[in-house]
Image (cartoon, rainbow, N blue to C red; front, side, top):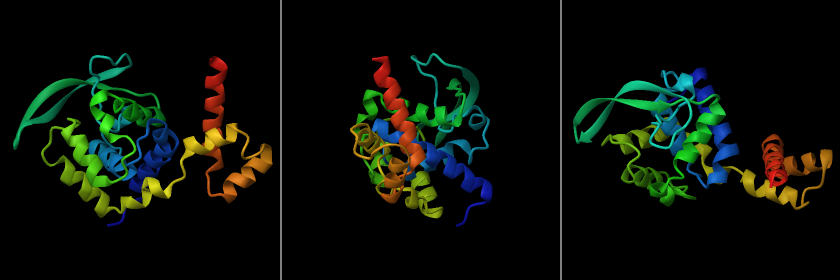
Length: 207
């Protein structure tokens, strides 16, 4: 099944942010994460999506940022939905929303998700770890991936921005225009790599 232009633009927005942000957190199962954003946000049309919360992230005890209170449905007993009121996170930008998802999964209970690229393994563990209460969550995510051909966004088809940024800092790729030509010739997204290089340099200066 094809996507409308708006749906495709939403997928590409999530994907472009994942490529830049997710490798730093060792989260690599992009098709599942994109499918989560689609399911949780209604292709970016939900109220929370307009707050850059594409994954239905609740505040929890440690959230110190902005929030909004909404009613939601949870499936504590299989087949029975319970309506509750809860607080959900609000992010300033789409990139912050994707980064928020990655940071959320740094909790200890999700540590088994790191570096997994197989869709079924990732979503199975995600559900067992308690990310979603819906008994149909796994089936729904895998169906979205298959229906819309999201496997073309798999991590193994993307160069690891984090690794190449570190190699740039070690002097492997030269400088200026020469660096740009070498990176692009090797199949890397120069802008994403250079952005991460700049961030790493800023981090080093702070220390």
